[in-house]
Picture 1 (cartoon, one colour):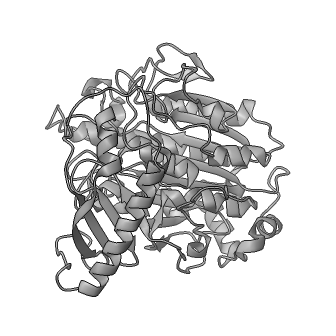
Picture 2: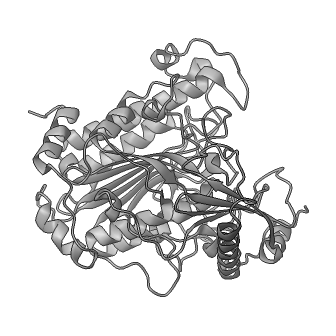
Length: 489
């Protein structure tokens, strides 16, 4: 008999009693002694579910009074809710780079959205967490949105299998023409043609098929599930699942950017499919030995989805880079717990490596650190503050150190007519300087409405110096691309 997921995981948490973790140096060995065997596995499995453009306040467990998300709310009840979960960037491709590599995406030359057929890609010398886990004997699978190149069939750019994924079923960017009946999925390099159903449903179907029928069940696994939702284009109201659409009958806005009830229904549909994947882990008796993470790649494009944060997608204010985060790891996360410790996408690869006993690459800067101390209720020790850079629009930089956040403006601004990287932008990226700054105490002013630059001069000057140094260091490492459209700005 399969236990109800909520009761099963509460039972696991009760048995654990308290979170017990081990010293950094030997964690990879000690965690194996503390974890149940689980189908002959010593190391835990990892599942990362990534929403696309989901805002900070779009889930019930993060305060939404409009959108019904019972499955993700339940996941939060079973695990740890992260109220200061930061992305790698306020835009998609850079953010995904940070998640997989543990590095600021600008170091890899992923400065912006990667356009169709662009030469920009996650280069072969960047090392992903999938590659590291595969080398350690893990089975690896990607189902969903890749967006780390401009074509999933080109031989001129790296593909998911070049970055450690044994099996992949993906789109290069968004599901087209909408999330309903998409026609642009590619499975292991072969286009599928038009498929019937919603992209989230198709992605979970593929994930469950891989879990049940394809993976080597004698090995631990890493399953990366970057959903397409709720990124636009949204299906029309009559193309949405009828039972979910009936939950939101007032389609008050048909077009962008608000989308009214269609947006709510899209998030609820995503929630349903996330729940279906979690239920499959239960059915296959995998939940107890699986670390599940739910994240979003950046803030929402929709006004109202970031309350009470300032800004939204493409902006380095909190609304563009702080998103919902949930972690469930039975025996290690306490059911219903909450943490306001800042963690970032760059921290996930170092954390997974520490759990498994692997080393991050030592021949390059790694911007993230393991967040395992957070699971013990301890602060994360960082060598450098968290830092974000996105070259358009103003402002372009954010630095967070403790409760303090600095915002930085470059000396020019690139128009935001589209996010495609152009050749002329590279000169701007490499040669622009930070000239104006703002300072906020984020613990007291989460909406970033009270600039304290004038009243905290010592702190302001110290953080300004750090921001300028980090910006110069990261941009100097960033790759320069050839073959980009010329354009102008």
